[in-house]
Length: 466
Image (tube, rainbow, N blue to C red; front, side):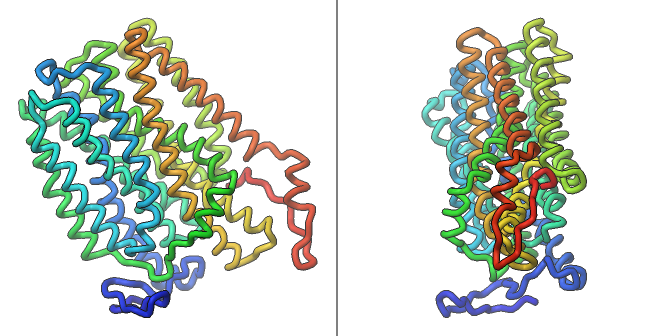
């Protein structure tokens, strides 16, 4: 199944390395005999690299906890810093998505993992009192490259697994990567508890990055059939479902990454927690939210992603109401518990929304009259192209969350205003999910089922099962 070198049909050149020429996960015989073993191996090392990427991306969520009065930064400065790190991580997801086809999934995993050394070494160099805010901001922006690893990893793993297993595989891949957030927060807790400084934390991650890159080089594969399809990218950008799912992903993943950056600073600023007290709590929410993400994918596989997503947003809205009430009352325990519950719900929603994407485009293929492998190929083509855009736009939600907290604390000294804004966003997500994917308007049914393709009437299709 693997050859080296492999002829590149586009250029006639030869490519060296671990290239798989034939890959057909929808063929059950192929999947059982060869495919599943290879896919699982690539998934495991993809998770490792993405995990380190998430840790580096959210590095500044814990570094700001070390930055006491001697650093001369206000809470507004810190929220602005984390907002800009999140912004870069969102933007680079688009080129990272296309890099998989240009370099190969395995090759790009090695490259992107190695690039994590740049922001880590840079932070190690400047992390001391007396460094200007502009320098911290510039170095923080470098950490944004860690956010791109998610997009390339999800695009790569999407190609390895059959449609019936994508919810589980993508949920596990993303969840294992998301765990990089609580792991670096736990590491920070250990360092602070031991009386160590931020450079000790950074020094731990430098060799871990090298290990992730080396293991990816040794054990992962490239799929030769994966191509960048500019037409698919344009089709995905023109498709309304791409942007609808991007909005829903703002509500789930945008919340997860935004709260991951902000949780510790909210506890410090609104409740006066010390760095050690804040670090002792902040890892719990991201940890549970990461671990639960594959469960969201599994539930979506079984009950339909749209249904799980709808009820999940309703629960997120309820948890936000509790946060508003507890914040106004100054009650730390219910506030912390509600925040942790909200993290869990963001993880469930992350899994269910990403499961919806391939299902939606597969349904669209059926609505176009495609069947069998043609429908599978269409679904893979559009879903793969849309994931980068959806992931990038969704991550921008994290920018909005940190900017909303910054404005709320500057205006009123609390996060209540920000939480009320988030509550409105979740209400919009509930309405959009129901109206687009669960309600079945007659006009929509006629649009999908009222024409014929090659003399055969298209079946009525609903997105409720995606």
